[in-house]
Length: 264
Image 1 (cartoon, one colour):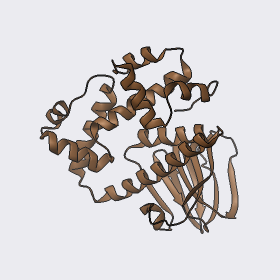
Image 2 (tube, rainbow, N blue to C red):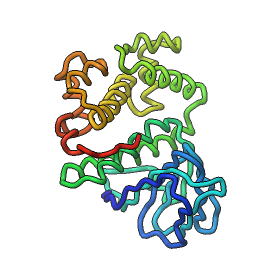
Image 3 (cartoon, one colour):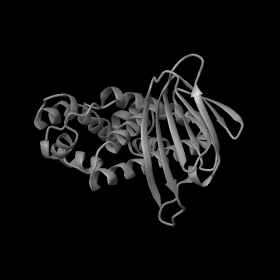
Image 4 (cartoon, rainbow, N blue to C red):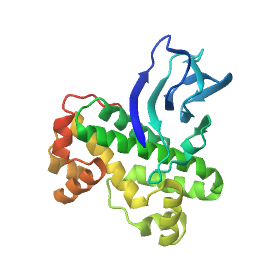
C-alpha cells in the first residue's frame, strides 16, 4: 500500500534547513538546481542537480543549503507497505540511495506535475497524485537497474531521446529512428523500451501531452489549436491521448487548474 503524505517544492530558499530528526516516513527528493547537504545517520551526502535521493523512514536526517547558496528541489514524503500487487524495488532496499538520473528532464516533469496535483482537492486529484507517485518510484527503480545496461546501449538510447525531444511535434516513425542509430526497427524499439521503460512512440506522446498541459494553463489557445500545434491533426485523437495519460480531458484539466502557476 502506498500513501502520499506531502509533496513540496523548495525554490531557492535562503537559510533553508531541516533540523535533525528521525523520519517517521519515507522521503524522495530530486534536486533541480544547486547542491543540498544531507547528514543521514551520521553520513554526509552532497546531492547535486540531476540526482535523486531516497531516504527510508527511521533514518536520522539533517539537511541544509550548501555553502554555494540556496538550492531548488522537489520532495515527496510517503508511507509504503509491501503489497503483493505493488512491488517497488527501490523501496525494498530500505537503505539510503543516491543516484544520478539519466532521464532527468522526464522525471522532473513528473515531480512537477505531482506537486501541482497535490495542491488541488477532490478524489480525482488524489488518485492522479498517487498514480504519479507510483510512476516516479518505478522510474527511479528502473534507473537503479540501468546500472546493468551497457554504456553502448545507453548512448544509442540517449541519441534517440534527444531526437524525440527536438522533433516530438512532427510525425515520428520507427523507421526514421532506426535509421538514426543504424539498427533495425525492432531493435530500436526494444532498446529504447529497455532503457526508458516505454516505446519511442509512447515517449513522443508523453512529450506532446506535457506541452499540452503547459499550453492549457498558460495560454488562451483552443483545444483544436493546441492539437494542431502538437501534431495531432485529429482533435479527438488528442483528447483521447490526453485523457489516457492525465486521467481527465483537456477541458477538465484546464478548469481544475485555472489560475495555477505551473513550474516545469
